[in-house]
Image 1 (cartoon, rainbow, N blue to C red):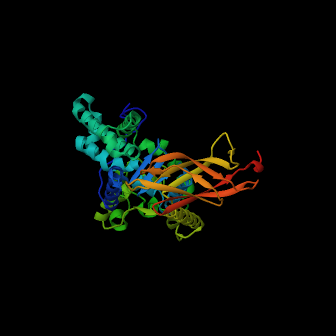
Image 2: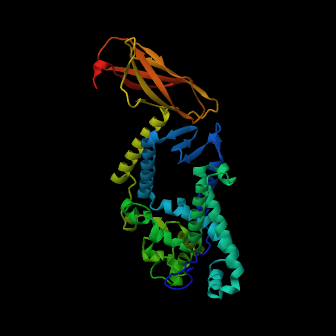
Image 3: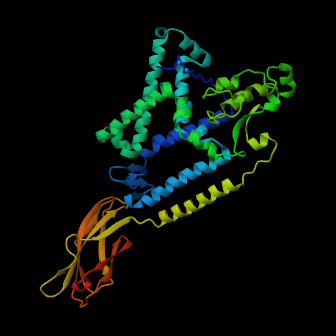
Length: 439
């Protein structure tokens, strides 16, 4: 079950140091801090960033986006996707190696925990070869730590949706804690057993990333011309050939031998490069494993500017400009006007005509002070009857609005409702029906 026997070949990744691992440390810590800290931050009394699914709204940097902003959410999704495509076309599997949550948790938390309880690669292999009961305390200690990490990760993730303060004080809804329990279980299984199999078998990105790269995208490559024939120490000292130390294999978290060429399982984490630099550096030669492009390996020139990158950059520029424009012009007032169902118009005893509308207002202003909304009528000479409207932050309300006129005309009139609050305003169009307008 735990992968120590049978068809599963357990991967014992050896600890390695180097420039790419230092980059891992910084990127991993920043991403973990982003996951954990951001849900606790607030702006003007509202969450800095929160996705409130039940209320169908998103808090972001002081603004509130609702279901009516679905187009913006779609654009942000496309922007994220094409950003991934663009950087993959340039730098290969940058996401997998440095930004993916799977890599971050395994490299920054899980492998250090495993090394703390069981030691480095050789010691862990020895522990697994010996009877389970001989190391039961180590095993259960390690698994308990994995469970704690999985629980903390699940709570931090769900905090983006439920709010960190409510969730961690156990005041959130029971549904959120069911989700926490589910993700805790999934996380524990992943940390304790599934691991690299997620990248190989379950992650869709590994399947289509080949379509996003070409022969001038960066990959992790073994210098076959200089490295072979391997195992000759004299040649290694003179020319920097491979001494077949297998440290690049031992350091690989995916359990592959990069010397066999580029493979789907490679996540471009740079562990094999750091391992090779440590060995070849002592011989006075550069590493045999480096980031390179297929074009460079074949002696051709690599080009950053090419049709693929131009297309992605153009799409990103257009999406960024559109998103920025929507955000800049985003109004804190959301208003919808609809005709009251069941009656197009009413003729009063004095001959005046009355139309009734329903005005739905949402106050998306993050200011804690309640806002007073005023509604004025434009485009029609008539009387406007509307109740007083006072809304707190993120509060919504639907009120009846009556337009009454004695204007003698038997046609359909266009009119506008101007809704104002704190020097902000929106205009919503409607129509006024009279007996002569039909229906």
